[in-house]
Amino acid sequence: MSTPAPAPLRIAIVGCGAMGSVYAGLLAKAGHDVLALSPRGAHMSAIAAQGLHLTGASGDQVIRVATYTEAPDTPVDLVVLATKALHAAAAIRGAAPLIGPETIVLAIQNGLGASEQVAEVVGPERLAVGIAAAFGASLRAPGHAHHENTGKIVIGAYAALPGARLERIAAAWSAAGMDASVVPDIAAMQWEKLICNVAYSGLCGITGRTVGAVMDSPDLGPVSRAAAQEAFDIARAAGIALSVTDPVAHVLAFGEKVRGAKPSVLLDIEAGRPSEIDYINGAIDRVARTIDRCAPVNATLTALVHDRVDRDAEGCR
Image (cartoon, rainbow, N blue to C red; front, side):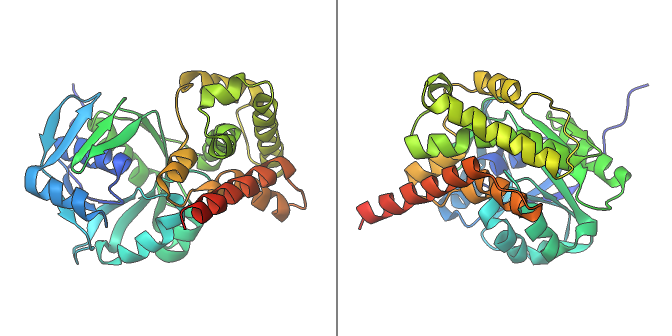
């Protein structure tokens, strides 16, 4: 006997950039009632006029999605917060009209720190945390999102959200063609991804090099691996139950899969946008200080990224 498809959900995608657009398109195609919320006026206007053009692993298709630049006063079943980490708190405050008594908020941000800020706004009891991997999403033009893979997402409760409600969310994503699962310890999964991020985000942001170039450099490679080892040590000291036992092997295996990639920190710097460095490398030193430790490698990388951003800004004046 086949398993019945999950009942459609009313879903708001808050922060409908590249990743958010992929989520919106795939969930809408699966039959959910999806609305997209973003201050990106040109992108929202193009989707409203022509539909969301989605290309890549799921095919070449145009999907109709309702669009808004301000949150409508209509509570939904699920708010997917898909903004950058540094915009998460402001975005969820702006999305308040979408949140009713039974609404679940799923926060999907890089690094550490954003979910705590979101929990302060919406309450920890309604918050789920997601970790997305391997989508390879980009915006090709207003109204056009591309993704290299259908991607994987793991979901966990921030605090006390019941497992049955998490499973309903995961079922909706799975039915949309994404590899979705619920995990009992989302903090461990966040740290295992973060260890990979700190190995490459700061160094690529400072040097302008790809992941593979950092890995292969006799000068940068050891610094990359030291950042990962330091993050691993801080996680263990903070009581995080990591399944990873060799952080260097962990980040090298990850790097081999994305050798030609530029991390989001570098892409943001090149585009003149604020980066998430404080939620990635910067998070390691921040956590370290709470347990009377220090993280000099990651703290230095964070400071050097800030210095590059400052110098780039001065050069534009």
